[in-house]
Amino acid sequence: MSPPLVLLTGFGPFVDVDLNPSGEVVRSLVAEPPDGVELAGGVLPVSVERVPAAYDALLEAAPRAPDVLLALGVHPGPEFRLERRARVELTSAKLDNDGRAVAGIRLEGEPERATTLELERLESALREAGAKTTRISDDAGGFVCERTYHHVLGCAHELGVPGLFLHVPPAAEMGVEEQRGVVARFLLALGELK
Image: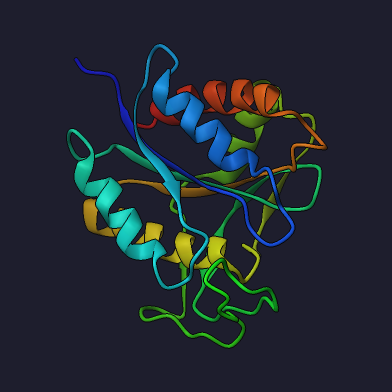
């Protein structure tokens, strides 16, 4: 039996984030996956307009249909944050990397999409994986992360698999190598959902 395949994505630098640990962790793990899970994916553009097509291209390039979709992004807080839902309206005052203001953009689809995963159980798995602080959140940030999560949950629904967005802390709060270890161990817990 083949190991579970997780489509794993993150982001590169944006606005005032010169080093985005989400993208660095994804690059490292996709190049060298932990034993017990197969990974496909890559780094997405910090662009509200371009992210859906970029995500779909990574999904299409996967060797087979993924068993789980996991998207990573960075947020300013010190904790690993499991996102429960993605809203349809973007609210952030930040500009994306294309210079586009995202506040007020309304996405197509349901007013809100939510993960089907039991986040309380996954929060425990995150702590066991080495996350010092964790939180379950109902606010994916209103920026490109929220836009991406809305798309990821739509893809997950179409594929009949679980989808999840995990916000990681800035590199100043926890280094990329340490975050890589946490995410690698967390992937094994996610892979058991297959």
